Length: 320
Image (tube, rainbow, N blue to C red; front, side):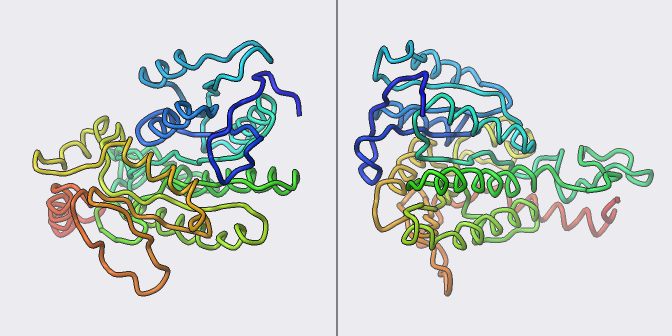
């Protein structure tokens, strides 16, 4: 397959040692940006798909500019504007990957929302009886949907289909790495759609686990607790939940766990790898005990938010 980037050095020992590596990583911030940077430092090339580039992502792309065709084996970082709720744009992202690189080895459907006001269960879509909602979900859509569902669950499922289609057509192995959350094995009334999407994602990842031993396609998900990302810092509602005493992981710490999921041969069979400040553990399918540590599991203000929500429901009800 022709490539405009020339050969790319391999960095993951479980992949073919003579083949190039491509990472498709939306979005261009937080955990996924840290993972992209980590892989670029190890000699892998990256294609980032997102609505726009944050300054830190622009800086990364400037550091790893695309070389002239065939002129260098240096890794490159590319960007394609992508709305992950648009299936044509997701397909175009994968198409760009196939065009620019000799081979696609790793796909990371990493975009996610922590149930913002614009798509929140407790902010129902706008109707005549609910005119002041902050929701941007359409109450009158013939095929109704919540943006949080589209981003957190429909997008990784569709991207997985495209990746598995590519690997099976080319009779080659691959690595499908999802970015999930401890919310996938927890629950909370404050953000029920978010919890539902992560539970759904965990079920999806586990269901594909047999692909590793049958076809060499490794499927797994990292499930961190609280992480210092723009998902928190850019949302006033979420930022208000954080206290000075809260312990959160750095994106780079989660990126290292993601690399472990790619490299360690015992993972990839539907693995859900919980990642907290004090270490990692594989989350079992049945009889799952509570995390051995709660450091970095959640932010302190979440419980207060839930108490306020219950009080509001008791006094005002839910406007729909």
